[in-house]
Length: 140
Image (cartoon, rainbow, N blue to C red):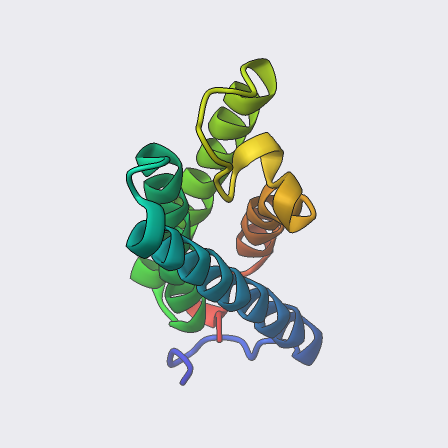
């Protein structure tokens, strides 16, 4: 689905976008499944941590869906999701480094996403960089 009058998206850029979408989808499922299981079985042990992980999962899902849609609105939603994700991982990551006992259990963003191989720290930078180089009208 392309916008009339828009330049075609080079195959390389399209492929990079598909990899990014896949990474966000995987993290939406991983963070969502983990948070869902924790909320269902032990919410009383670390409610803030588990709810923060659920928020992260929702942000990953929103970004995934926005990256998949063409147009300015989806572009701005993806931009907002990446910015929120970056702020979340930096704030929660810094807070948990400064005070490791802040949460009763880790979140997706604790210690800058250490439990997920620091991908939660890298992913918003990659998403923002990709958005910077792709015009809203030409995104796949």
